[in-house]
Image 1: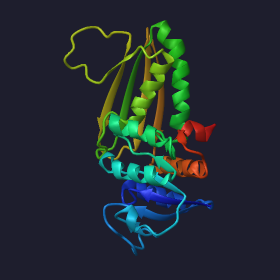
Image 2: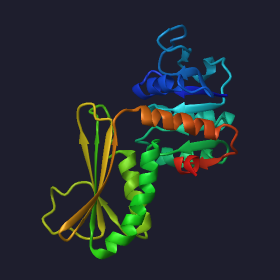
Image 3: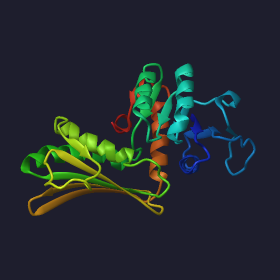
Image 4: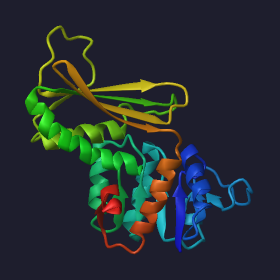
Amino acid sequence: MTKVLIFGAMGVMGRNVANCAKAMDDIEIVAGLDREDHLDDPAFGFPVYSSFDKVTEDFDVIIDFSVAPAINGLLDYVEKTGKPCVQCTTGLSEEQLARVKEISKKAPVLRSANMSIGVNLLLSLVKEAAKKLYEKGFDIDIVEQHHRRKADAPSGTAIALADAVNEALDNKMAYVYDRSNRREARPHDEIGVSAVRGGTIAGVHDIIFAGEDEVITFNHTAYSRNIFANGALNAAKFLNGKAAGLYSMQDVLA
């Protein structure tokens, strides 16, 4: 049995993680952290604390679905205790990402831009496609869509997909997020990355390979946030008992 604390328990994804855990026999949510105490709220089914200092329950792994400004306190705790952490929050600064990497020398940390199985398979597929299609003259663009409440743009998944393509092409590609001030033909050595925000879109990512008279598009559509919650829970089970290091969903799927 893997006992989990949810960091960001009162948020939309925190609640999704808690609900999805109910269907799993080998994992239990024992506590949560958020901005306020909710110690006896039946809507949660577990106590929610406002700081790590108040937590009395024993737990094996932290699942983080919070916001970037809250991450520093979490990283302080992981660094101090060595507790395993599945870190799912996107929109982190370069400084925060560097600190995650540094802390993984002392604690097991699993970080992925997207927790779904499908997206992590897609990362491998677009690498292979890029190797074969770019040299044949295909241009590459990424378009992502998310709900109106998502604060960061482009999404962490869009950047991860761009990074996968770029890695396959010897890191020679430039990322372009806005072409509104440019009056010239598109250079071949760039990846366009565009973001759409609106409604309740859970997440859509299109990787477009556009060649002469033909287009190949890889698409991943999330129909609910449960795919991310279930991915995080499986990652927590994987991380429980692991040695210090920086892991990803690719390790979970291996």
